[in-house]
Image (cartoon, rainbow, N blue to C red):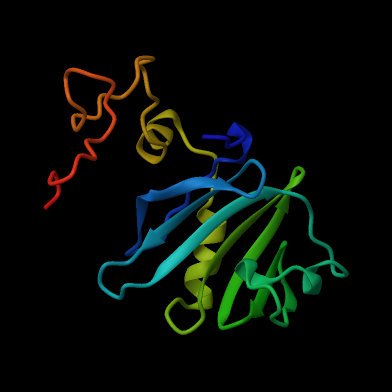
Length: 163
């Protein structure tokens, strides 16, 4: 999938479930997944990418990729609490990468984001199997099912074919 294995993380947040279809590469080789709360329709995005964040660089990095928005940063323990563009997030710098947990500031509380950040961890084998889609094992081309069994498979453009 193009994701660096060391950048894959999972988290837990009460009432939120990972939307597996949201899992994918973030940036160059980072990881991202969205957790969804069925009851409130709120979403939390977990993302991990290479880099760092300092007091100087924090305000220059947009919250949740919302370019053009002002970012306000505040230290909260070992993490940064960041607000901007109607979103908020926690960012934690670890061993050459930044782990972020973000959400809509009107739907996800700061306490939920903080809890999700501190619950984030490298997945066990079982968690990894549940997060990542299964690897394709077949090397043969995918059978389309809509091509004719004879001929070159080009569409029939004869007059009258489509009406």
